[in-house]
Amino acid sequence: MPTPGPGATRPDEPRGGGALVAGIDCSTQATKVLVCDAETGEVVREGRAPHPDATELGPGTWWEAWLQASEGLLEGVAAMAVGGQQHGMVLLDDSGEVVRPALLWNDNRSAQAATDLLDELGGEQKWADAVGSVPGASFTVTKLRWTAEHEPDLAARAASVMLPHDWLTQHLATSPGSPGSPRAATTDRGDASGTGYWSPATGAYRDDLLRMAFGRDLTVPRVVAPAEPVGETPDGAVLAPGTGDNMAAALGLGLSPGDVVVSLGTSGTVFAVADSPTADASGTIAGFADATGRFLPLVCTLNAARVLTAAAAMLGVDLATLDRLAQSTPGSDGLVLLPYLDGERTPALPSATGLLHGLTRHNATPAHLARAAVEGMLCGLADGLDRLRDEGVQVGRVLLIGGGAQSAAVQAFAPGLLDARVEVPSPAEYVARGAARQAAWTLSGAAEPPQWPVPQDSSAGVDPASLTPGNGRRVRQAYAEVLEAAQPLLHL
Image (tube, rainbow, N blue to C red; front, top):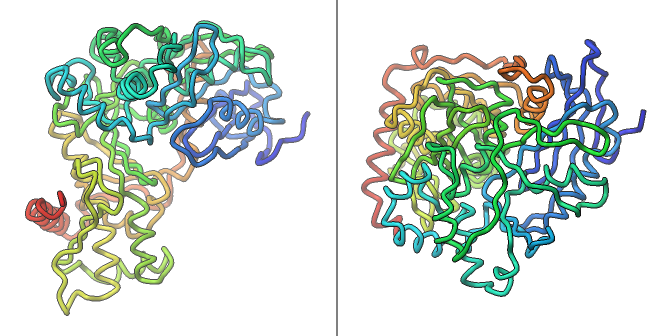
């Protein structure tokens, strides 16, 4: 058996000796590969390769990262799937060659294009009704408009458009080491729902919106059914459809209606599996589809775990000390942090900065500042969770994931501020795990994905009823009042 490649590890082989499947997470930062037992979900091999820190990237970089991350891991793998960063724009000419480096979700040069497209269709409600979301600069449709306006020569060469996961899936069916000779492209409903020209409600492309954005037609990938095989690798592994990263994370966590994820990474996301689509004209909720046939309404904030690292740096302490400080005082005693350190997406305050309000001699302590930082970060996400509730999304339990979820203070304060039962799954690569679960589903041909257990952290199961009554409501009310009063300052 080959030796694992750079950045790869190989735990013991699965005890059950079942089929092996691979899940690929092609994120903004890296490509990660998990090889799992198809029956149990047990991880038996894994690898990782970094990507350059960029907002545009040649897709060939993903291929090279895939080769590095998967080296020595794939013997015996019977099926694989890709979970990819959403919204990225990959333009190809009529021979399948890449026209320009892919514009990634975090490239904001199309902000004005997004504003123009909102006006041209008739406003936010028209867009929400059409595609379930009000597209901002991250969405593919706005990147198409920017390219048509600012790079007309390159736009003239384009014959088709696809997403990062589509491109990598397509090239997995070609000869290893040669990402050329593309075949007919496919995608899935989850990733397609983040383009701005596919409707989760109707399950169809809105070709009129694509033409409005780009000025003419482009070929788009065929949207396949969940778990439909889309081809094979040269080694004979079945290719599952793949999906977007948030949809893959939902699969990796085994979400069902009533489950909500609050993810605390560089940015924060709040998303849930729902049985019906949403169409939020405020733009707060992106009305995505999931990878199983249901829907995945999602709220995104720009400021999450980095609020904690910034507060720790300001206090001159590490994150463990920040946790202890935050929990050493029963409340912030009127100190409120609006944590818009990098501007903010939800609420839409792209030029805002952070604001500390209510400072007194009594609460001018490291402990109060630490607590205000944790509470401020969580209040922004709690607002997103309330918007999901307002749209009729069922909220049973909240699963807290991401780097920030490991904070003891976050785990302690989250149930009261989110007003929900909070569980903390053990840290894992949930996007790659979800892609692997989809691969196992496709391999089996079953009606539903396999049931893979999700390990829970020892801190799981905190219920808001066990906490100090009313404290979460008081913090939320103070946060809302400061946000309302501070609007003139936040728009400077």
